Image (tube, rainbow, N blue to C red; front, side):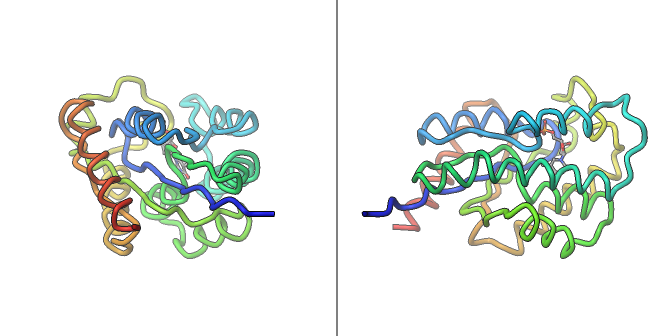
Length: 205
Ligand code: TMP
């Protein structure tokens, strides 16, 4: 029996109102990939998402927040990501492990290596093939932001640490990350994303 080549895992990351959900959807449609998200990519995950993002929720300790994100990821990997990749289908996900490192690690100050292990060992998270970071100045993001969920309401210092965290993660793994300027119209950003992904695909031969 001939085995199919595994699909590729492409992750969109960025701060609040970076436009990544729109761009993830566009790229997934272009590639014929499965489009999914974290938290909330499964029915169980949707419940976790409600719990963790509800602005009216009681105070949630950083460790609880990290474990809820990990629980969402464990279900997501088992139910959506791994079966699709194993069947040879590409997956585009709106957020993944780097969100935990940026938000719970850099944002909340939790241990980065511990968070990495949590995702790898307990959620069985596979490494992404490519991470697209949409970089949007805080002023542009603030203009785009309408509703305010629990994370969005976390304060400017928190979001500045998250942004700094993303830059550090991208700088540490330049072979896996591309940073795309997220300012401008949806079409302008989509063209930049497509160029970056095409360049990455051609570098893979
Ligand atoms: P979004 O998917 O609508 O951007 O919102 C998800 C929110 O959850 C966002 O504020 C980032 C946050 N988040 C974490 O803090 N850690 C994680 O691991 C993930 C996946 C998301």
